[in-house]
Image (cartoon, rainbow over all chains, first blue to last red; front, side, top):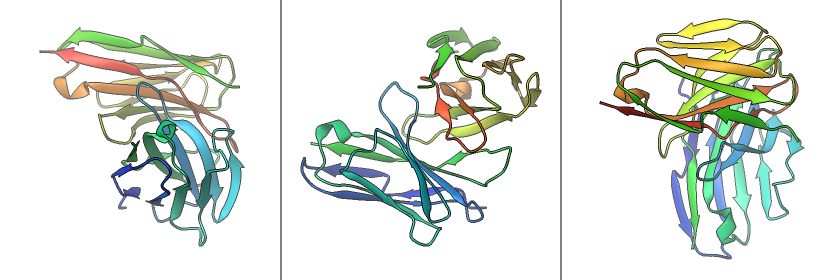
Length: 114
Length: 110
């Protein structure tokens, strides 16, 4: 069991550029979550997938954000026209659909928008 | 929307002391999760709770699912330097996403 992986671990970009992050969940997990975390706060839910279907999106997920999970395995999160307020840690978590759900997190991608 | 409160916000303790922290909510949850996060890393799952009143241990850590289903508690016994970090609680219900607290920052003084 290799755990959740995220790539890249760090990203520095200029305001207005597009960025894309990747998450590879634990292999048998059918649910995949994206969170955003800013300094001094807990993770804030952005969106989640069950297999390839995107089932829920937070109001935090503006039109500049898009997430995909085309084959129900890895997922990508794209931010278009980045703004300085997008600077944060972007966390991915995965789980299995069970009545007793437990989410396992990846190491995160830290984004800095200059 | 749902919000979780964690108390204390931060704490400084001597190595060897026991630690208690809690998490409260205005909403009922049927799952509580406790995580520890080190700087620059993702949260690591410590304990999962699925039943009101449940008491579960993981080494020196013990967590309890409150009877009202609106709170949870985490205790760390005989703290050591590697316990330093931020501890997050998360509450969830089946079919819904989890809500996270703002964290309790723990510092252990040698």
